[in-house]
Image (cartoon, rainbow, N blue to C red; front, side, top):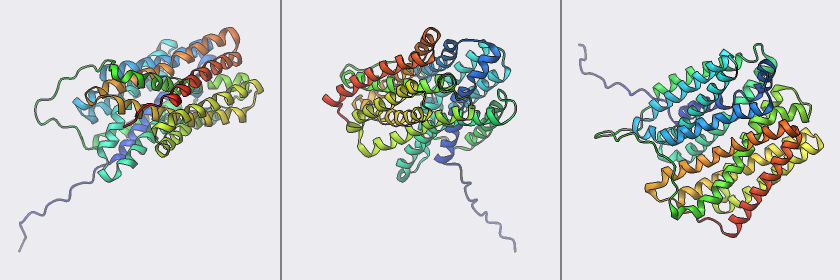
Length: 401
């Protein structure tokens, strides 16, 4: 006798927050993938160090536009569609670099990469946290942080290794990234959608940039700390190849990628340390460690010492991570719930201005003074800014709920 009673099918296990973190990391890789390759582009196309920094900085313009215009898009449209859009923009950016059609395509590729990163920053983090079970929220927050900074660090590490030791240095890194993006898109299609609107879907509106008056006392020093920390990341991401080649005589692209990788990994470590210290103590201490890292970077330029530069990268990265996470925690705690999203977006806008404006200034100074002296001017200005912020938050620490 045949049993006609249907047996319930076992539900298929779908990818969880670890898979979402992997998608996040692959998307962020593309934003720093060109870092070790700028010197090769300079030789092939022919442009100054100032143009290198401008090509890098337009990425931040794309990030800021995406944050202001579509920072909350995934809350309305869902996580998966926005993740897929971000991955598609990253793929278009890679295609622009593969075309090697001169500066216009390089600028276009960087702007598209910025749009991708702006969408990924919020949506990737939200997707990782959404997919984590309640008992794994702490691990999921760590996974999101590691995916963000780890992806940014892996970009130059992978492209530096491929450009130095494999054929087609200006082609293979982007082909590899396109393959990874295809895998990430397939994984994204399998991720459960966590955003559902039982009734009518709310309208999609640009977030804009606003800071409530009651938050400005906390916002200003915290945003300046983020600005200075991101300026350090921008310096290593945009100008490190020229520093290493012209000041320290290091032309190995894999080494260049590894140095930038160390900065971002150290930032992740600093963010973990902030979790142990708490936001209140971590903000001034992060400023202290960041100043120490900047001083080591300056010393490496004076002494032409690669080990000192590496120590500055690691120390500065740890300080940046501590100060950044503490500042973000303080700002998000101080903001009223109904304005929190817009306030955090404003905080990120200031941070990404830090990754663009100072490095363009360094590029302009490098044309007039040389890379070494331009780096020294940057170091002095950054040390003064971070010291002032550190004193301010030490004397009047922001309240953290």
